Image 1 (tube, rainbow, N blue to C red):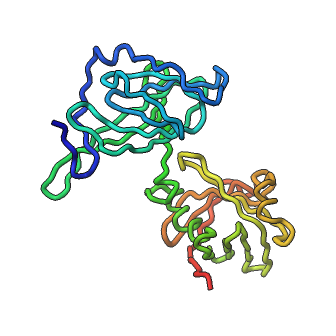
Image 2 (cartoon, rainbow, N blue to C red):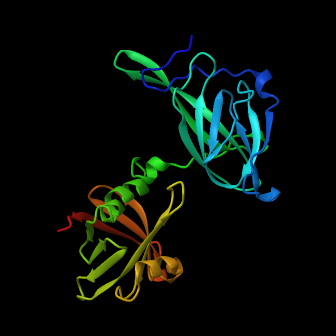
Length: 284
């Protein structure tokens, strides 16, 4: 009889049998877009993990699920629909896990089992992770952190997204005012900014861009001074603003009320830090 957790996600304690994992079952190649062989990666799928979709393509990688399986897939960013079933307990609903795959490498899609408590009830929960797996050795995790991208974890960049970027999104439409003793930097919707130098009274304006790597370990703000009536949003996004921006700032600390940047540009300020208070201005 199978058991379903009250939390909707169940798993038994992981059972590792050397006889099952010593020789992975070969699932062949899944390459619907015809990538060159050098652009493929090798993906190992952990025992008891069932994969039903890769991106929007239906796959059946549940064969020999009691042991590891191996399949070649294209490089790039891919999302898998996965579930867990060891014959006794299982996850009734599929979950999605996304990873960044670089050509020529090997990766491992594995599960982890966690004990969880809900009042007096103790259950288990399965999470899924993707790791670099060259030479049969587990390396860095390459799972894409969508919770962080939405501002749902405690990293610096996710807090920056939550408190500085999200309020000025088109769907929200607010402005964000950053201020210290010397400057007032206002981020407006539509990728616009204004910078006021309190000492000189000079006000500059332009377009503001932001980029981050997929793991939210590094991000940059690009301030490109421009006439907003001339440089449209589409033209800005199509431009080489990352190279042309006069000011490049790296968020290094952030809370609900304060953000600290490190200068990357201009070069004479590179490495210096500047801190602002944060005020969200509600749209009228």
